[in-house]
Length: 371
Image (cartoon, rainbow, N blue to C red; front, side, top):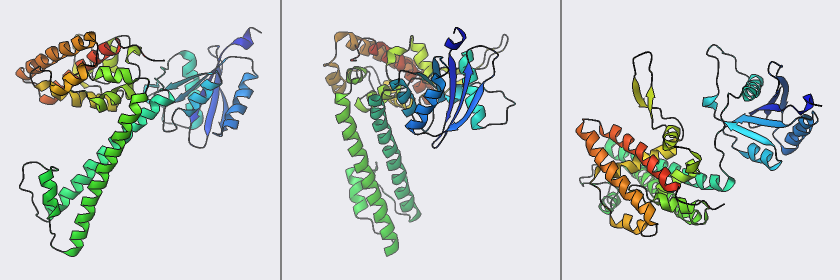
């Protein structure tokens, strides 16, 4: 009876049409058992759960984060079962192991979960993931718009049709585009299609931004989104990206943990008495890191509360306003100091973004989260 209460660690290698399953008893040294592959339907999952529960032991499931998302995690949690999702990049692997199969991956997950060598990642709620998908959809639209504009400008360059104005995509530039005449009718058709594609992509971006701004108002994390906007360089869209990607910032015990999660800390290769640091690790969440780096450029100017920032600050408590001004004084000064030392502008901005994350963490701690 005592032996039957031991935990079973179940490794799942999840794919679109199949899931490879293996389980490891809690006793160290016992063999990991492979159960083969099952389907991905709910009835297949239920059958597996019944089969494992018949062994009379608590179950702990684990699988890698991947393109199949978190549906399996949520389904198992609804059944009051323990489940962990791990990052593929953080799974220990032997350097000489050159054989990879679904069965071996499931066995490896079960064995490492039993030994405690896996670290679970943060899994957002369905509501949080919806806002994150909306913000990522906007980013994809922005990327497509940028590529479409490049195609149009490359086409005009091939025809030696040059715009003599100072800035592109302004009202003056758009009027100039409406007057462009290409050498042949066929090329004129291509040009008009490129112009139309740019217009369609701009409308797509506008639609997604409108939807994002509307949905975020009813989001339970909206108070944190408003508070984070106290930082200079972080407006509504940037704040939504940060919170949608990172979730609850207070889940990090220290700002340094948040910086490390964002991949904004220097890489290091030290041995003996020699200490060698390199560029940032670029680990963790790319979207949140990009939003911080883009916002960090605002600190290259002297500390100042602009009209737009003042309007955002008026809605916030005095404690958050004080953190905002403290951040400005420190980061603007920090930017000047690093620039005076001859650091490249990109390096300086990354250093500022790293400290911005710490101030964002401090602000988030002052906001009570709505359950």
